[in-house]
Amino acid sequence: MGERDAGTVKMVLPGRPEFLLVARLATSGVGLRADLTVDDIEDLKVAVAEACTNVINHAFDDSVKAADRVIKLRMSVGNGEMTVEVEDEGRGFDPKELERSKRNGLDGKGGLGFGLMQELTDTFRVESAPGSGTRVIMVKRATR
Image (tube, rainbow, N blue to C red; front, side, top):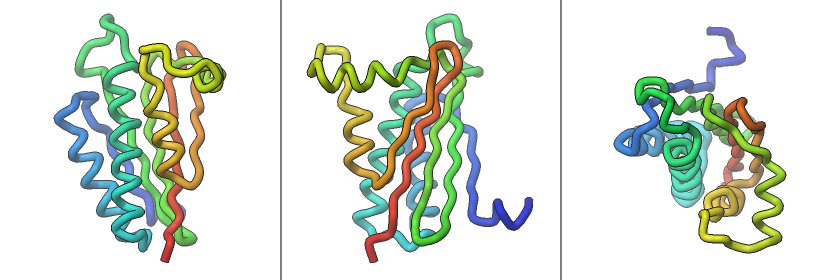
């Protein structure tokens, strides 16, 4: 592992609800290394849990075996901030649909999760396309 990766934690978790606690605990530990406040860490834990929940609930169709439903987490610290990437190799979607849902309001299909993640982090980005999986990138800056 090179110097570039010295502040990075990478994890692959089963895409099942009982592993959300592991993602939250890892976020806490890495957040402490990033010198985030308790409130910053709590916000980030909620955002990470929401991103992981989206993978569990939406990324895979019934044809994907349980063993192949995984959540990839990458957490890194540096320059007074923490970056978290939550990635899956699921069905993906067109991120433009997020903007359309915001304009059209709630339609009973959910839609609050991405807005919540955006509100709880300083930088939020979604990379996805139909058939190619999804990556959510969130940055939380230390408020100290």
